[in-house]
Each structure stands twice: as structure tokens, then as C-alpha cells.
Length: 82
Image 1 (spheres, rainbow, N blue to C red):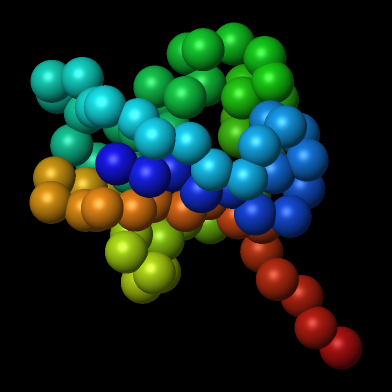
Image 2 (cartoon, rainbow, N blue to C red):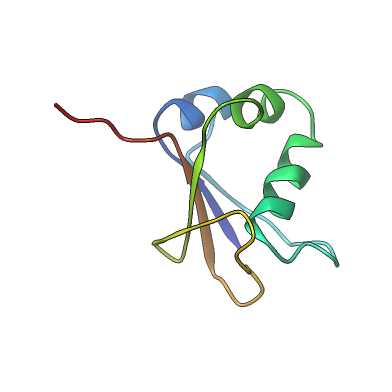
């Protein structure tokens, strides 16, 4: 699965994307986020305690949504406009 990071998250983790083989039991976007944060820094500070949005295969998703058959999950900060 491809994991993509946008904007400040990309800067914080030092990469725009990575390929990841999901371990058994990681089936939702929330579980994936927890898995990434369990790596420690810089993922912990990039993803924890800040509002981070998620998309599965380029569709906005929630943290209970399945990633079982997904090819891409993206994490990104909220977008503001003016």
C-alpha cells in the first residue's frame, strides 16, 4: 500500500510517500495512523495531537474506514481558504 503525506506532514516525516506492507490486524485508517505513530519520531509528533485528515484512494475518509482493499492512504492537514 502507498502511504502519502501532504504539506506540513510531508515536511515533518521527511518524505512525500512510502510503500508499506500492512501487518495483520491493521484494517482501518485509524489503525494505520496508530501503526505509523508507534514508529516514534517524526511520525508521532506529525500525526499525534494535531488535526489530520485522511483519504483512501483519493476519497475523504474517517478514522473508522476500512483500508483492506485500498491501494493508497493519504494524510494531510485541513485546508483553509480565504
